[in-house]
Length: 196
Image 1: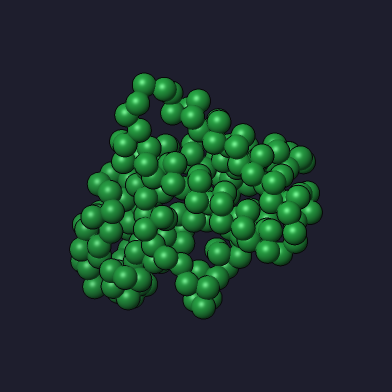
Image 2 (image 1 turned 90 degrees about the vertical axis):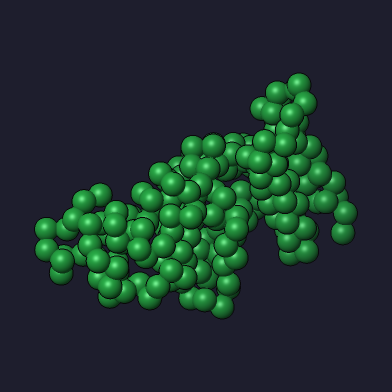
């Protein structure tokens, strides 16, 4: 990323983007103040003016990655109108994001966002809003919506996590299995909708 022209020109966003660059190149182990300072060509104390240590740096990166993911999903589903299209496109967008940015996806799944944290709350609400919007045409009651959201999240994130870990070793194409799973989710949603 290179050294800023003036030390005072360094912004919080510069630090976050440098950390994301480190994450992409070296994985989660690179998310530290010292490593990011080296990436920027500055001394570590300069980062503390913007983020209070490794925990704050990690949280800021997680929130930024979530925003990138949600923006990507919104772009992939923007012109769709049926629940089936939206769910399938959202499932494909999530898997494509995980394949394109594996370190980002792993970090997202390992960091627990807290609804009581105002910064994380915004991302949580946006994520829930995206999923609710994808399911809105199913006309689910509140309990059904929660059950469906949990089921969809568990299936998609579970599949991707197992795939990323290299544990899908049987001969069948994982792409084909993923399509079958998404189709099965659509059937399961209809089942949940038909129950009270």
